[in-house]
Length: 97
Image (cartoon, rainbow, N blue to C red):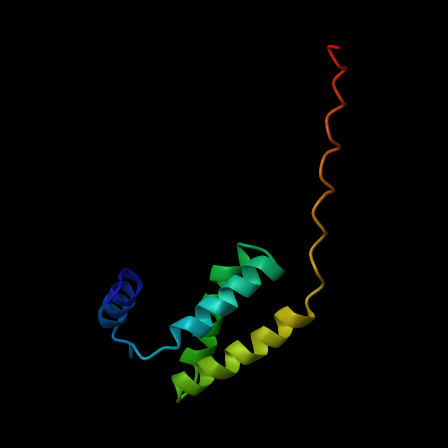
């Protein structure tokens, strides 16, 4: 068991939750949100997905459905501004010859 698995199991046990979450899919979603929307939106999105799942009688299915909805939202989100162009190369040095 790696650190992430141990941590997830410990948190689930502490909170009385079923540890059978699709951790990979949730992490993929937060990665896509962080890179496609904004970094601070990633943990907030995970929290909101959890809230949506917690309102359901079937949290596993609700989590999967919420992730699908947010994945579609991220896919349609306007791209962030392109990175600025690289700086121009330094001027050529005069030859010592």
